[in-house]
Length: 239
Image (tube, rainbow, N blue to C red):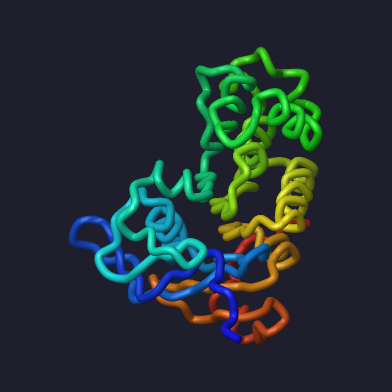
């Protein structure tokens, strides 16, 4: 019996900006209901890869498949309708809209009342701010609002880029607890994260990029000390 197709599969991906090539023949996969950490030094191509997967940047070569279906030519909104949710670095909210309006925008798969209740269940502080403009929230509250899209929209795959950037450790704890909840519920997760130890704790698999090339793809426990030191030695550790 053949193994089921992974939720996300990237085959031979090459991409970049203008004359610059950032990703070179990158291949990786994210299994159903698993979390994969995408790690590497600054400039390795992590954000570029997420942008290609979500359709914000066209690839030059290669394929992107979601649950076995080629989405290489699909536009970003079409990928979203197939269950892909991209939470970019820098919160990814609509600051001029209220918290409630931000949540409602992502509830096309279910009724609004249920979606808001689910969001507030995980981040109660949002329930106290439903009428406030999202741009008036603290940085941590804005990030909570951004990541809760990974729940209210019922995505099958969530791409998260630097979720902890600039946040206090206690807020980071809450957000990672939430990410663990959605993975346990069956959502697949591809996570770019500056705090390597938090990413390794949350992930079932790890892919390390450097200079746009995959140099490691395996379980967190399989990362040898010399590989860690060479490619991730300067990465940030959250205490």
